Image: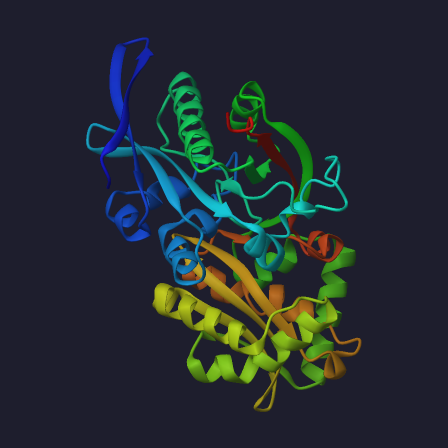
Length: 376
């Protein structure tokens, strides 16, 4: 890592324990420092932080675009104790990637200048997910509070040094009361975020999953599975190969068109390829086919006993009223998850009612923003 920016002493009941903060601009450096051990979080109270804060995904960001990334890490005793990602969002990326001016509709942003919040520094993860400030399990609340406070201070210093207008924490779990209290004390304003959909998978594969529902839902799921079987739909979980990417890109384009997402085919292909190269055998896909023809798809990233459902696509003309969506996102995945030891599946955001109806917990999130004082 780069040279430490400061030395800090944390005072605990057992005395002082010194730690330092340092800034790096390379996710490859983070991976060797134990950064990814922080992403898994603090047990079952909160789900793991999203892949968007893990070093493989940060390398993906470094491949696409100029985000002026600065990763703040706190070290103690030769070990990374906490970390915070920071990325610059400028007018170009704000419109093409993040739509930052849509995150906080309650703010009095001038209609003739919708990008008045940028350039900004987005901390704790660029995209929606359980993002936020990373800290190593085993620290006391006093230590964690001081650590989080210091990491935010460092991020704010970066923003002020670069003349950025705001520091934004995009998506914090509503139950992360420690982080929220530190943010409020530092002058951040909270705004409601989207509902985060997470499934804690019951044991027993598909049978165990179905058995976790009430009788009414068990019967409904079995009816839906019979409909898929009658339509000759077969669902597999397989590696995300180049050949598979080529075959499912039309499905992804259909989903983008339906939801008015402006992503070109070449861009989508490149993102798949980078993900495949970075995550290697942990980049998977759930694919529904009729014969050799793909009719449904979701990209699945495996990481340390968790799975994240990412990009998806469907043949809407074929699908009609068939439950291909549920087959791909849920039913076709459960036996694989059991065999692979996947404990939790992160379904991100959107289609909340559908995902909750199939077992997901809907977790509230908040967004936080602190406007920086104008440069003197």
